[in-house]
Amino acid sequence: MKEDLLPCPFCGSPVEIESTYDNEIITCTLCPARMDYEGSHSAAIAMWNTRTTHDRWISTAERLPDKDMACLIVYRRETYKAVWNDYHKCWDDHSGDDYWLDPEVPTHWRPIPKPPESLT
Ligand SMILES: [Zn+2]
Image 1 (tube, rainbow, N blue to C red):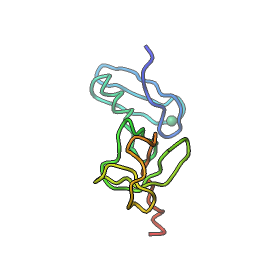
Image 2: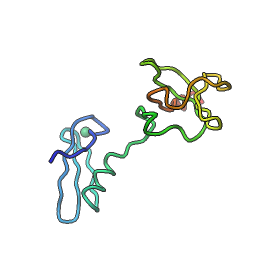
Image 3: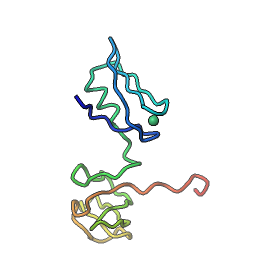
Image 4: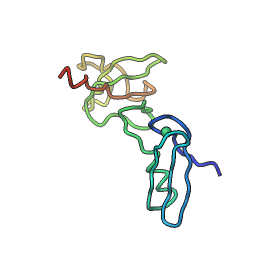
């Protein structure tokens, strides 16, 4: 059976899972990345597949931001800066003070990263 494992978060290569007596071991096929998990096979896969939201696009059908925040959104296949207005549950334009789009009109969003610490 093909396992539904996301690729290695460090190098992007496929990973393999091996079940031992008391562990599930997931290893990258290229780099030294490895996770030993003491628990069920399916829980190990769920743990491996958990990713931070700061380095990927999030589908608006999957979930929306849970607080006001500046984001990048994908709307009509283009990327825009937008502000999630959590009070009104809508996307505002970059100034963040007016209605722009309904929640699920953009297909994807991601938080805008903070500037480098050397600039703050
Ligand atoms: Zn790797």
